[in-house]
Image (tube, rainbow, N blue to C red):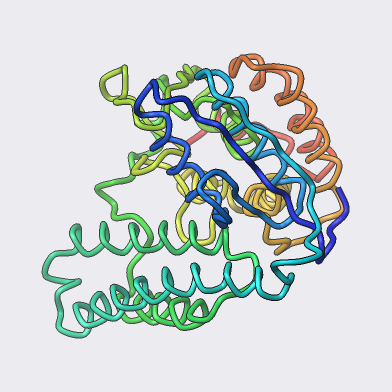
Length: 326
């Protein structure tokens, strides 16, 4: 889908009164997507492939619960100007950045007062929560709202002064503890979870068992490892996707093939075009095709595995599989 500064995606929905949780669920999802409310049942996003996919999934959820929804590619000719719409988006994100800035300044005061050192686990937990919220806000900051640069600078200062890593040693299992484990992630796997599952089984835990659950579900298996899930052992951290986090934790960042795949997965998952590798568009097409063809998560993992195997070989991956050694 071509980008167009004057084109928008409009989702209109009709939600039945029952089940009673559906309206709250839809509203929560629209908020996560960063959609702009035009009216009670009409929501707007900038036109993009990602926005269309997000709206299509939400439309299906609404229809599955007995409601209905329509997605329209729109241009405004009266009532609202494009620049007014963009400013409305910026205003919402600016308010979120202002709240993040206030909390970041409070966290920075704790660092300067020695609080980070006195209670490192609590500080680290608060820092990670702020980073996740910042990443979520940046992900829907379509027009670079006021306050973003300030929050990013505050978080950078916190990291520098605290001289802390993104996870404490107590939170990171050793390499031996990552073997023959059950690994849990969210249903509806896409590129980061597909690639992470491939990395786990090929290089970290060849005997891995994968379980897929709803985002808010408790782990169905005791002592399981969660990846790409909120508060999981391995998940997004700052501006790093789960694949990048796993790569560092497993000590595999020096493998040129894996490092290249990490850059590709990063750009597809975070949509920030940070690395702009030539292979990214092709991998995106393959992943989108798998998602379109298969609903079963185990099947998606199986279908994506040979793609990542081939990609790894073509990008100069090490000859030996590092899962055989510590």
